[in-house]
Length: 298
Image (tube, rainbow, N blue to C red):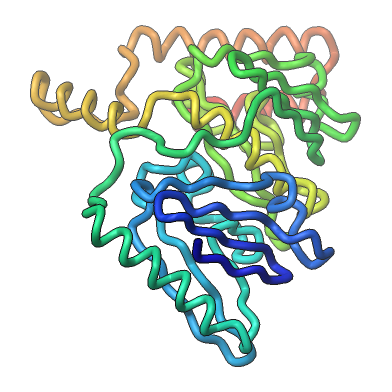
């Protein structure tokens, strides 16, 4: 067993699995502590490095593309401190860190683990049900449905539509951008009906606008990951896209819906806005601005 324990957390490698446990110190980000222990099978690993820094080192585990729903959902946008595959190492423990890294490298070589993208998720992601309260509302996922309950501070157009419930089968993908503290982030659920929509997150009833506590809003990545883990793997979508291109010639992904369906979605969104306007939920200015955003998106 190769193991290193630091204030930042602990890594243990038994020859087949890298077990990553977050530290309990207050300096460890809430996201890592909430995500909890991660067991990474060797077949999901593409490499490991020890990066020297001025006062300490940093172990970094590199995973194969497509192996982890967390990396797929966050797209490399997790802040460094919140990345569970990095471990800060004190100077006097760099020798131990290098030993752990070398044991992982040796196992990768002996097992001849491929480096090409994985064709299925090799890590399960967070367990469900999972629920997170963000600045724009509470989002929860039970394994089959996503539910969004809006906060009192959400835009009126969102609160007027009531809680949003989305079946997993209706989802095309999840888009996530963290709240950096300087720029707002969002968590967007793209469905077959909204794949063409380009509404800003604060107006989109299928998106959470992340503008409040950076620490709290980062937890929405838990939901993004749990949903992503249960959607078709990217390799299956790529294969389907290649099949479509071969059968019908090159066609962009945004053309997945027929033109007639595209038109129906647009009309339905405009009718919904019209009803909100007639009921007095939207002001003249809000109606005009939101309608313009919908039309631009289509």
